[in-house]
Length: 251
Image 1: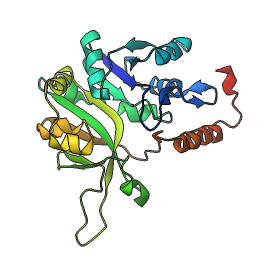
Image 2: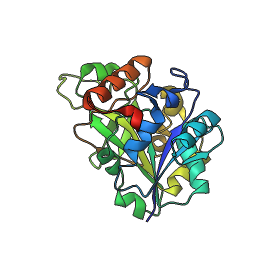
Image 3: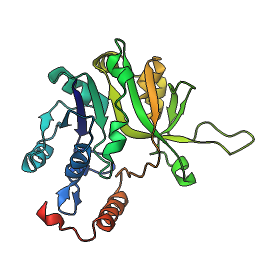
Image 4: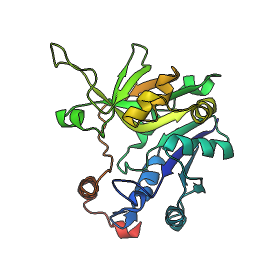
């Protein structure tokens, strides 16, 4: 059984151009993401997918397997192109802007139900929101789901809205997803619908077409998505604190 991890990486981020190559203690961010992800026990292969020669050169410099793709509007379409070139039983999409991601978290997205399914099937990780600031931050995607963990909706705004009590467990989307090949084929063969367009969330395509897009909760999730220079500074500080006596220049 082949489970392929794919790290989509694009240079032209609106908020943070060149983000995959942002320097973290002498190494590009994509190096940190790759080296964390390759520790995952359930991935049989791992590759960076990009449309930019600068990212390819950085990957080659650090012996990171990579594949050149066409320009894509989102990571799912890029993973689909990879699926057209590399056959696998399951494709795991790992966002390239979380250099602190833990391998054990990645392993949780590998669900036997998806691998065995003969219909379109996918999943994504979620975690409880612990800080009210996270709840109000539009970069944290909030998720609601049914009693079988099927995703009902995803939004940049807090959902649901409390009526009489604020005692409610809110959840956020984590940038690790998995799909079988049929789910990826479905995505690229169907047009975005109104909620996907309104929220700017391509994962809503699965929801709006009522596909099996499951949530898998992870506990004690402490990663940090790098969306700004301030986020980058926080990541660097965290890595330094975890590795006080480590010589990063030797790696």
